[in-house]
Amino acid sequence: MPSISLTNPKNITSLKFNSISASKLGGSVDLTKYTSLKKFECNNNDITEITGGYDNPNIEIWLVSHNKLSGSIPDISGMTSLQRFWVMDNEYTGPFPDISGLSDLGIINVGDNNLTGTLPANLLSLGTPNLFRFNVYQNSFTGAIPDCTGMNNLQYVLVDNNEFTDFTGGVEPSLYFFRAYNNNFTQTAVDNILQAFVDANRTTNMGNALINLEGSGNAPPSAAGIANVNTLEARGWSVATN
Amino acid sequence: MSYQLITEVNRTQTSDTDWWFLYNDETKDVLIEPNQRRSYVSSPHIMVIGDTEEELLTYIEDNDLIVSDFDEDEL
Image 1 (cartoon, rainbow over the protein chains, first blue to last red):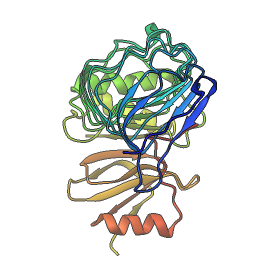
Image 2: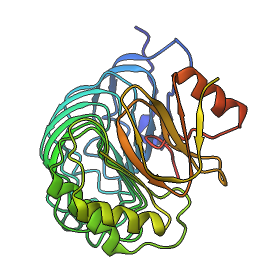
Image 3: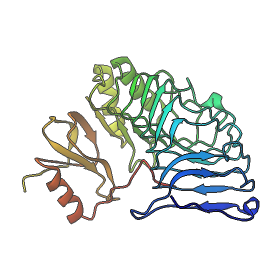
C-alpha cells in the first residue's frame, strides 16, 4: 500500500485526496502532525483508519465519505471550528456522535453507516444554531427524531431508512426538505410531523418543498393527518404518505 | 413505453409493483427518485408512473430532468 509523507506537515492547511478512479488510497491516515489543518478531504477511497485530527480545533471541513472507516465515530467535540462533517457511506457502528457546542457546524452527514441508538431529543439544546443539513439516513437509529423547534437555519432533514418510531415537537419554516420514508413511525408520529409542518406555515419558495413519509414500516396518517396533507399541498408542498 | 403522466397529483395511489417518481416541471428537479414504494402522493408537481425503472430513467434523460443527490449536495 503506498503511503504519503510530507516533511513539514504542521504548515499544511488543506489536504485533498479524493479518488475519481479505481485507484484508491487505503489503510491508515495519520493527521497527528497536521496541526494547522483546516480542510481534510479524502472521499471515495478505501481508508480504514484516521488517527489525529479529531481533537484539532482548526479543522473546519472534514470530508471522508465513501471509505471503509469502522468502529464508533471518534469524539469530535474538540473540533470546535467544524463547519462540515461528512462521513457517509462508511462502516461506522455505535451511537450518533456528540455534536453539542459545535456552534459553526452547518452540515452533518453520517448517512449510510451502521449506527444505532437514539438521537438527541432536540437539536436546539445542542448549541448548533447554524445547522442547515442534518443527514442520518440509512442507519439503524431508533426512538424519536429530534424536535427541530428553534432551528431557524435548518433546511434539510434526511432520516429515511432507519427504525424511528416517534416525533413530538416542531419544525421551523426554514425546513423544506424532509425525507423520512422506510421507518417505523406510528400514526401519532406521522400526524405529529404533518401538524408540525402545518404549524410552521412555510408558504414561500415552495419549489422543491417535500415531506416524504411513505415506505415500509410507517403508519398511514389519520383522517386529521390527511386533512393536513391537503393543507400542505395547497401551500405548495409535495407530500407522500402510506 | 407505457408510462403515465399525472399532472393532478392529489392522493394519487401507487402500488408496490408500480415504478414512479415526482418532479418539478419548472425547475426540472426530481424530488422523489424512481422507486417502487407503495404510497399516496399529493403534489403541485408532476408524477410519472411506469412499469419499469428503465422507462422512467429514459423519460428523465429525454426531458433533461435533474436528479440532484440530496444526500450529498453542497449549498
